[in-house]
Image (tube, rainbow, N blue to C red; front, side, top):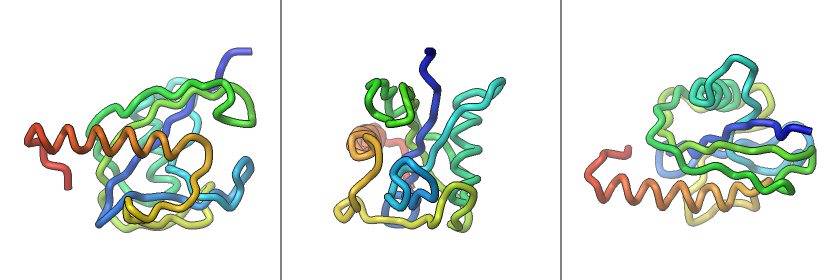
Length: 139
């Protein structure tokens, strides 16, 4: 069976990072990065913007590619490969679609996260620091 393709967004907003509380299994009730599956005919960039908007109400500006996460065991539903992006959120935060809630957490007080999202956030913060060190403004 071919792996499924997903996207995740590490969204910087206010004084922290946006997390959603999952409405559906797996990890129902746990916090996770906004994200979801790429639809047929959709670019991964458009998919991550769509998923972020659906789950958080925010429009996002992509700052860079965090990485590709392909461990076959990262999702209990099967082999799911995720492409993760670092982004800045704009607008009013509000939960929607697959999210029970959408909240901003300080990076030093993150809850237990679903999937491998702790690893994605660590990698995203390294990218953010690199962008800031290269004089690229990250709000």
